[in-house]
Length: 581
Ligand code: PEP
Ligand code: MG
Image (cartoon, rainbow, N blue to C red; front, side, top):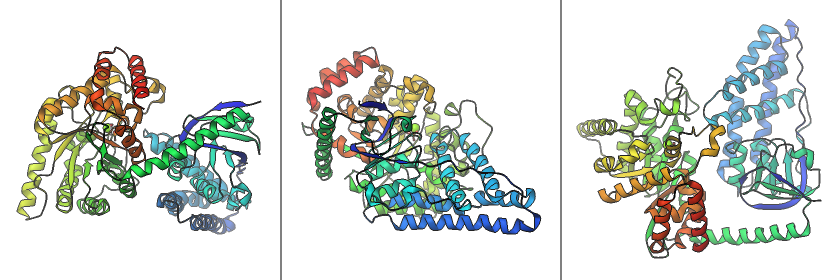
């Protein structure tokens, strides 16, 4: 009998295969006391285990196929760096020396402390980094306990075509899977922003996570189907299911290979309207993908990632050198640098001393508010952006504007910086466009006022939706209220687009909504002509744009703007999309 299970699909695609279960058996860590005379040897035992752990990771990295993206090696490097970090060993060494603990116990206590610190973080992404601590510590503990290597680390051709099922997986496991020909994976735990989920997407392996109790229902060698888009897993599927999903697989292959052909040439609607497709970028290494998908440039470079995992903020020179490297990679494509958006869900210690705890951080001192309050944090970045503008096409974008005074303060600061650079006879782009993110309802309602003073606007729907519907974007208890189609959200988007048109300045959208392909005809109907989204969505967007006739969208757009609920709008959107393609 077929059993259907529902998890969270985090990497699209369908896979059909037999299951190989990876049991990461729980290590039993016991506490015992070390004789004074054996303390030094115990410390060396710990350090030796760390060094063996590193050797294992290097061996895994050396097995990564050349065809695999550089990101994969970077994940392994992250674990190697963690093993090098004294935060991992300093405290256990102290515990061994002062309390006479055995190395395993001392390491376990430090693991617990680090995990507790990660779990307290507001940032969902950083919270998932506790998994990395677990994976790194687990590897060292296995060496200390002289545990056999994990079964999946033994190369085994027999796994070719298998689907792995595990309670949890490390990034290193995921890399090896591809090497061993494993076609998909399921985990019982994990979050959509975990390294493992990110890697699955980067490797193009279908993956379903958070399938609780999967190990109760699925046995070794069971035939299963996994759908990485919907999160559905079918155990022991019948012929009808198999035929249906095999067809889906063929259609996917056909669909995605067709998309890569769209890379060249501009994005044009059916009626010939040119649409700009820009990429959202976080880490410098993501810049390679911008050209791979034929993006028109970068519409959002989130610079706060420059501040993470460090003790001091980057200085002007570091900002400048980073932007120069990015410009070199973009080779002439425009780069929109968003100035610092620290605070709320993007807490980083490296940027600044943490201030008093804010009870409503999303409504507190974040983004431009923080930058204006701490010019020593902001000015070096602004100066670096201007200096870099002499070497490529840069646009500067200010996050979270909420009133005119803030914008005027920034513009004044920019004038002062320009005067300083003139005095130093430094080269820079005097006409560098200055734009603002519209992500606070106050700014959306008053978009005409901002449009009057700025060269472009960009709608940040992630925050605009959070603030309009009053739902904390990192609180999963109110996730169910998240609705990009809420009439209030769409009216605000419409207001901003119209303000841009009236003022004759471009308006982009760089929130996640821009990359959700099912919304593309709706956004085109409202008048959006610049989309900025994760590079992986851009070719699919391009396809949908090419199938959309903007001249045919007027009636649909009127109906959407007149509708009274997100549910009604969702059904109008579904109907329109069916007519479209
Ligand atoms: C947004 O809010 O939509 C946005 C693009 O910015 P971020 O997600 O970085 O807050
Ligand atoms: Mg935002």
